Amino acid sequence: MSKKLVAYFSASGVTRKLSNNLAEAIDADIYEIKPAVLYKGADLNWNNPKSRSSVEMDDKTSRPELADKEAKISDYDVIYIGFPIWWYVAPHIINSFLEAYDFSGKTIVIYATSGGSGFGNTIAELKPSAPNVAKWIEGKIFSGRTSQDELKKWSDNLNL
Image 1 (cartoon, rainbow, N blue to C red):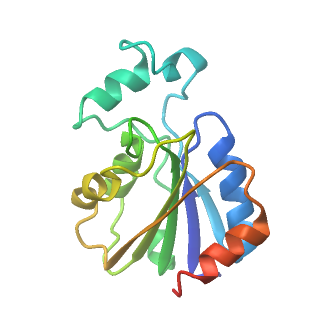
Image 2: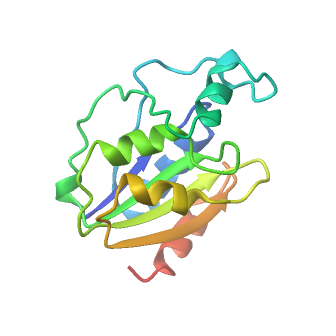
């Protein structure tokens, strides 16, 4: 079994495509972080302050429920965690995921998809959810069209 895991959350499919390419490029296992209640189009309307994603992101304590807790985190040394950037940070379901498992001694590499914003305070907002992580690596923001070759080169340059 691989010692690398690509765990990702994708609301619209862009991060899913990128994550599948990443897992294949670096020969890693893959795990989809799924909410108990899937997001629909109206839930993702960031222009509507009453949309589900807007309400969740406005409340820093929000922790959307996970559909399952079946990731075998203990089997891996390095976990790549991917997500779309929402409001300049990771969606709070990533905090839900981190709080559901023991990441003691693990290396976490975050990566994301975004239409234009950067990571903002993402690492600072995720660290309290997984306080025993050995090493956090702020990876890169990618487009959904990033090739496997580009992903492999990026991962190799992390020197993990």
